[in-house]
Image (cartoon, rainbow, N blue to C red):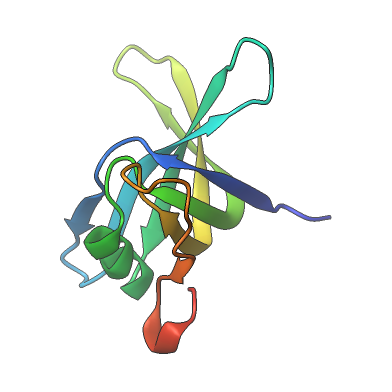
Length: 120
């Protein structure tokens, strides 16, 4: 069995970084991916990164950035105050690549995010 997701789209918002008492850091943002249909539908995905990857993404990813995301599909599950069960799909990213920004005129910088010029 394989749980693998690959997306190419634009960041829907600037990343939100959160530091925990344990010293871990999490960065989250959304990615908009266009469907190749006549109606030009857009799918939205929530993305999370942890650790050093999260810090780098927090520094380089901005709203409108064209990015490639690799990871796995996960689900946040919780019960609200009224007892309703909720599920929210989320992409746990293992690799992200900055491909360009909304200001770019079609050219791709294909700039990897990570140490030593590699993606993470």
